[in-house]
Image (cartoon, rainbow, N blue to C red):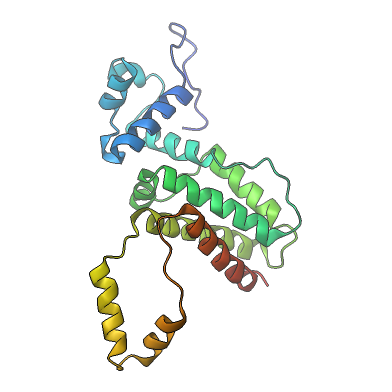
Length: 220
């Protein structure tokens, strides 16, 4: 798809662009979920017929690829690597997590068929490799690290979106620990802080803290 022209040379002047169609599809998915995104529903939201969209996008599959890559394009890659590869990679990961939180449907899409590789995703990968240029480790290790960090971003985004611990579950865990049959759990709960609330800042801080501890072990 990425190598095909956006529109054929023949025919009337285009009324829309892939960018406009993709933006409308993302807005639809943000509002109603991934299942709501069909060529018919998208055409209705744009005030046109489904047949007109196929002049720009060959299939729903291609449309979903365009949507995923457009979200990848939301990550700001303009800053040059600072020389602190851990801090820079954590910053990219935080942006990726935030993009998933803004567009939860992308978590479902990636779970169904894996990450789409389009122009923006390639730009992200290249930038992440530039960030890691001065980091220890082989190229293979760096690619694996970028993939792992991306997977952790999806995991934390899903947790941030859905994390609500029912009071009854918290009370049960405390009661079980207090029985004395799980001394390690009791000791951990006695010194551990509370889990993150719904605050994005708390989730960002936890994510950054864990990555900061993990990354030196991955690339050493």
